[in-house]
Length: 361
Image (cartoon, rainbow, N blue to C red; front, side):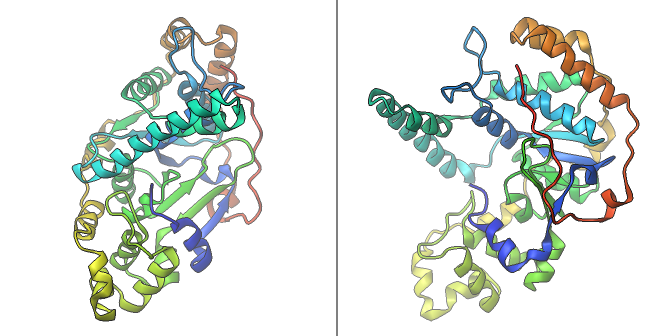
């Protein structure tokens, strides 16, 4: 779920914190990437004509591998050094949210079946995206591909976003790439959205310090705003949307004071609301020590033999297309990267110059 409505709220009340970037801005920078969110995006967007994920003759989904290979190449061409971070064990406090997602997938599957029976193929195609779950097998296959491509990755102790943020705070990386604004709630100095997305989507960077300055909030006050908006650890209270949450924190500065105001009427809705636990999970998440991660970080040469064995022999990718993609990656990794002065200092207000690419399996 992320933080409900936070992106739009920041655009409205703290626009100076939002910058539009060209991908060249991140040249020669180490970026931590939330891999679990990324794999979901690949499986739901890289599809066949009927909206189903790409698959081999055994029925194994391959969309996540097609997308990952394309992304690694694009990052290499831009001179970016990625570290992919996968989810570990989710905290027990998130089980309620995970159960809601499971129920939503099951409901979508029933709706999809009904739409197919009624011949409403367009509706069925839309619903198919809501039935997707990233499995352990998808993650293990992605990790294996990264191994063959020489790209480092981390399996987090808990949430991938939290691990990415811990690495950013310790300067193991210079930013966190994710679509989820939980990253800001965890305290990341910099959130990067749509990095190397392809197509015509612009890269958006949100700077947390500027958000706090524009809002006039401390980090603790901002975190209370995030929780009041609604997050994975605590649903929003009935009748409180992002704008109302913002006004309440501006006026009262903390959730405790918000609940105490108005003769405590709001507190009645907040019985058993786990906002205190949500704070704890955002401020002290389970993470692997970033300093230990830094000791083992290595970007290695592509192991072409293992990559071809996995992609072509096992996952049934087209041999010629795969060879060309690996050639492209090797060439990009060898080529010296020329980063302009603008790429280091200047945010761009226009749409980033990106090239539409058609990904082939």
